[in-house]
Image (cartoon, rainbow, N blue to C red):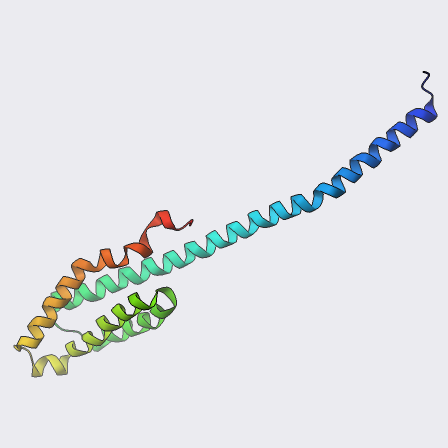
Length: 154
């Protein structure tokens, strides 16, 4: 069997056509693979952003309750700052946790200076401060499902 230039060129053209066909066939698969990878990283980035917002919310909520427990009152500036934070809670947490945060907010209204001055030594005020102290201790457990770093990639 003798190879001539014509046969060699024909063989090379055949191989090129074969390679081009394989590339055309595999390209959609590669595109799909890289698109899925890209989407995966976008989802992870979104999850990390939500985690960071939840962590920030938790930190601010902890500071808010700690302020109440240590000062036994609540100035209007702290309440206003917490109200700004509270507006975001509905978008970051489930209904149960949102209801819990709402209860913390609603109970804090009883600690405004005008209310505290009228009820400073009342049993109700003491119970409320004790409740906040207990909530401060329970806070990490209540938010654990949102702040577990191992669940970010789920």
